[in-house]
Image: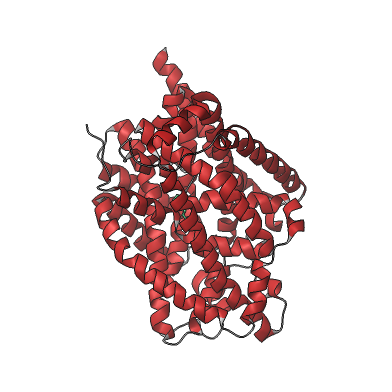
Length: 488
Ligand code: PHE
């Protein structure tokens, strides 16, 4: 059977960029930057982009394109046991999408409640009390919140329909949302950086803090955010590149995706920190105490910023519609990566597999739609990204760097690419990335064994660890057993 192909090189690039740009840029990046002190985060983040983000993007593009296989089979063709790395990547992606769709659901709720700007009194109270109906602590799990539930159902139906109909419909939607998104974001940037007090926010954001470079927590957040934001370590980019012809350019595409994604995040930062500066001046509190730092940040700051715009209702509707759309094509890419592998393995029709994946993803996400959903989301997001995703990154480097051969893959990249990659890439893949990531994970682990992440109770931390370890165990033990059985 002939492999599916992207119609043109540009469409592949578009698909990769729209997978990368998503809630990671608008929701996750700002709250990490705020949590870790603005300028203290930006510098490690940019270093992580250059040291690990773009090199791994090159690795994933090259692997998929050279081997013409989805994540699991591509890694398995290096060595049979490495199929576990591919499964792990997909599993991590599955857990991520289960809460990602919930955040997309919040955006959908804001789209509808833009009519009449229902949060205009107090954006913070509106988010916690009206949208999330958040309980006082994680110990009070409560019930499923009806509005979030309905939004989640709608989001999953949207995702299912697009996976079912294939990539064509998505590229159509995206081709008109990207220009609108750009105009809107520029308008928002101009508005927020001209607010009174915004300069204080911007200087908090842009002034580097070199002492933060000694904090492992900042580093782990920076590296995992780079992976999350570039959709690296989830099998997505391997899959997308596998639909390319083997002669497609790799290096340039990786650089374009890496840079456009990062620029987008940085611009979003201007809106967020400009508004934070304004709020800090208006309320007369220091910037780092204006709002709670955490996954709620974007849903307090953007509504606030939007309510200060002229034609606020209209702008809000457009903004949240765009947020839904950019979340949607990222979510879509994750489901597509899982789908591709299962179709390759089972030969069951893709619409059935997509249906099962979407239903399971929806069910897994219900916990995040409860009254204590935000707490669980915070924990699972932290553990998946800080531990599981970083592990995938390390393992991919080992598999390619040491077993497949970094030189060999780089020779292929250079054969097809206009920009030639130097020998530094081999060192990055073989030594620097795996070593650096292992050290920061170990240090972080040590710190978190002493003090629970986010001050959550022990049982909640156990939930986080189960979310990390279950995929690892299943990915490596179960398939290996099956291989043994089939051999005997
Ligand atoms: N990169 C996407 C974002 O930043 C999230 C994502 C992760 C999408 C993994 C696909 C795979 O929002």
